[in-house]
Length: 305
Image 1 (cartoon, rainbow, N blue to C red):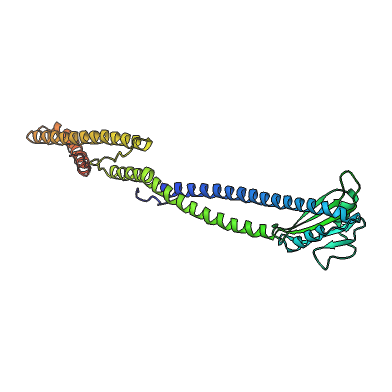
Image 2 (image 1 turned 135 degrees about the vertical axis):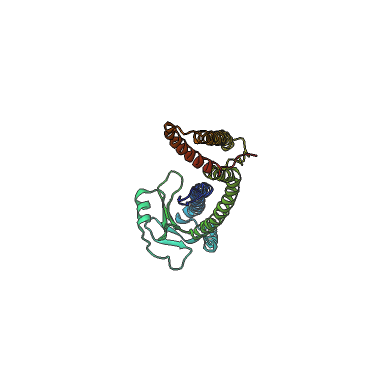
């Protein structure tokens, strides 16, 4: 470094930090996209499962509500009661009274805004419930029970638990965070090694050569390790350093010749008594002092052997 200059972050550190930030940004974008895609896929699968359950139950509930006793509907409701995916399910008549359900507490007249909307529109309605963090908690499903191209004879109500989706998504999120950290650490180490080898080391060698030239040392050229832009820069620097070395050697040689010539002039003038030579002697002595100063400075320079 040049005297008095402030030492800041190295070029390699800045490049490594930039690449790390880029990796973090990319991994964050990938994680968000993956989480969103998985969430949509799980919710779509849960909705598909709910529709399939509703269609299956409605096929037997229609006969049951029209007075045809069937034990299949009871068996289906028993299976729904043991299904961890389903919180509550019920078959209601046309007026909204529960005629069969999976929960002992779901009896009598049942009223819910979603059910009222399904009864009014005579078509399926679905509503997702979320917790305070926005994670899916449950979905409510109300569907008319109607034979093909006939008026509804009842309604099917379903409350499905989506807690397993939130737990699975949370596990995926932790896994993505862990994978992202590994990718960031690996990317940082690999990029650091590449930058040190391909950028930082050549730049450091070039800086050292520049520091040596700044104090007059032209004896050691910069190392040219690559054929890229940094390699061409080091080669051009060596060419410049060589030309400057030749120039300063010429100045040093010329200074020696001036010093010798001045000594000869003073010696010859000292042997004469002509007063007109006093001005020449004074000028020659001044030139000799300057030549001595240049010679003293040039003695500090180092050139190739």
